[in-house]
Structures are given as structure tokens and as C-alpha cells.
Length: 232
Ligand code: SF4
Image (cartoon, rainbow, N blue to C red; front, side, top):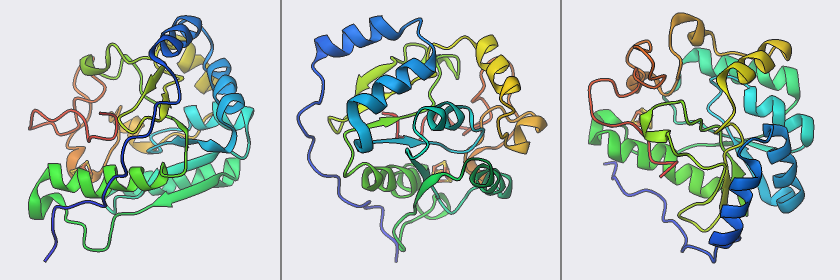
């Protein structure tokens, strides 16, 4: 019988950056190109840094491997991804030869059909990410302020609930510049983007194409849920 209990999270570590240092970095990077932010992170944390991606596209991957071709790229394989997402991962491997780390849920992890979305995300996303970050000092994520209203104030540099430094190089990048970079660098795209899904997650919770300006409106579309928990 599956349980809702995810793999235990280790205790929060002392933060790698002080609040004053975080503020100064955010001021420094507010108008910086994402590559400059990534360069700072790789210099500061070396192999204590990894990148997380859900393979909606390879925008962050493309920027990061240009700075550090060996950066560890973490994919959380929930067991509930679209075939298109797994194929995007495959094409990214062919294109970039990634140093890929795949984290999967425990064998008895529940899914949303058994215990609901809270338990499903906790076991299939949050706990695997905790494992992936256990030996890290910092991580890169692809959050953008224009993803949806709840991400409007996403900082470029922050300290997460573990005490790790979380870096969001794309947070403040203007959409027009990001789109121009994506076109110029011919980044790998999940084919579902072309079908109107501007944000692609697990298939049971990416219920319909994007509706209006909120890129994540198709995710958990029939509930008040907006985040899976890995960015909280
Ligand atoms: S997004 Fe949905 S299917 Fe994926 S882990 Fe969360 S609840 Fe489960």
C-alpha cells in the first residue's frame, strides 16, 4: 500500500549567502544577460552547482552549457511525463551531450490518482529534487517573472528552504530577447509548445493549452494549484 510520506529532507544548512549579499547580487544582475548570471554561478560554486529542467525547451540548458559544458543537468522523471517531453530530452542529449542526472520517485511513491496532487508532487517532484540537491551548494532554475502572476517577483538570486543558493537566470530576461536568442540558437523545443501548451508538466496536470496571457494557465487548470512545490 503506497504512503504519502516522501523521502526525508535533511535539515536546513547555514545559508551560503547572507541577505545583504543576495540583495547586492540581485541589484547587480537585474539588467544582466543570463549568461553573465550563469558565469557568476559557475565561478562561485563549481561542481557544487547543477541545473534543473523539465525539458519544455532547452533555453536555459543552451545558455548554461555554453558557459560550462559539464554542468550537471537534473531531470525529475515523475513517471507521468508526456512522450513529447521524453523525446525532447532525447533530442537535447543528441544536441548537447548533456551530463544528465535523472531522479525518479521511490518505488512505492503514490500518484495523484491514489492520494491526490499534494502527495503526488511531494513524492514525485519534491523528494527527488531534494535527493538531487543533497550534495550541491547551488542550483539553476528556469523560472521567469512572466510565467504567471505568482512569479511576478521572482528574484534572480535567492536562498532556498534548504539553505542552498537558487539562481533564476531567466527571471528578468525580456521575452523579446529570450525569443530572439531561442530563434538564433535554434534551441530544442517540446513539440507541445507548438500545440498551444506554453508550459508543459506531467500529462495528468497539463490539462489544456494555455489560455490568455498566463503561460501556466493550462496546468492544474481545474484547481487553485499553481506550483508543484519545488520552487516554494
Ligand atoms: S504535476 Fe501532477 S502528475 Fe506531476 S507530480 Fe505533480 S500531481 Fe503528480
